[in-house]
Image 1: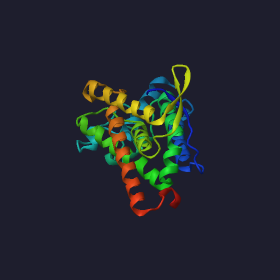
Image 2 (image 1 turned 90 degrees about the horizontal axis):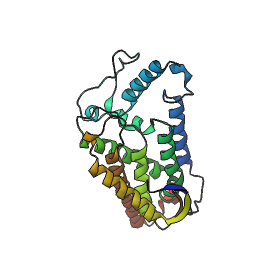
Image 3 (image 1 turned 60 degrees about the horizontal axis):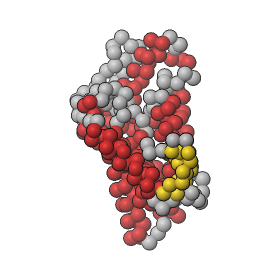
Image 4 (image 1 turned 135 degrees about the horizontal axis):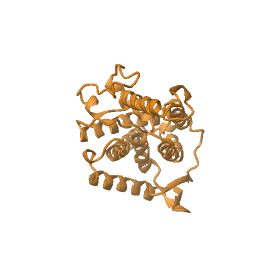
Amino acid sequence: MAGIPLSDDYPVRRIPVATYLLIAANVLVYLLSPMSLIAVWYGGDLLDRLCAVDVYIHRWGALPVELLGGGQVAPPSECPGADYAKTPWTSAVTSMFLHGGVAHLLGNMVYLFVFGPVVEDRLGRLRYLALYLLCGVVSVYAFALTDPAGQSPLVGASGAISAVLGAYLVVQFRSRVITLVVVFPVRLPGWALVGTYFVLQYVLYISMPPSTGGEGSVAYAAHVYGFIAGVLGGLLIHRVRWRSGTRLSDLY
């Protein structure tokens, strides 16, 4: 990331219900997952917990080889619960609500908290929610296509949140965002922060292809294609609004 965004100066006109619900869903799923120490029902033994994490991530995460019809990939057979049956395409959605750790979760939720309300206010709740989910799915499948035989589970909301940033670049790029750069708060143009984010993700994507990264590596391809999908989605909604002469945000 180019920096840690703290706030956007765009005055939203109503409570961003959809954004808050998405944040709540991501946090709740994490707290109930074996990655969370609060979820004591997965056991306190380290090996049992690691086994539970492995099964959980394989079951609900998105594996490229599964998404593209290569058959279900099971976690280690010695782990309890490894005999589950999975519908691969649903993992393109469920994977967007999983996170590998607290830092992963907080990093994503900070960006969603700052930019989500602005995009939601500009697009309307239902269209914003549709953009988030659909572009998130696009980012997952785009990532799968870059590594069709990949068997490492993809988890995280980064692709969908990148789509929100892409839409932000279209609908409200004139805003100023207070950003923490190193340890100093700086007031930056929204387009500069979001544009820098995309350039950084693209450079990392082309320099670190999926085949060179193992399990736990960052899915830069999902970020890049999620962002592009968000830009296109934002442009499409704006074009519809312009042609109809109606503010979509006034409809929902």
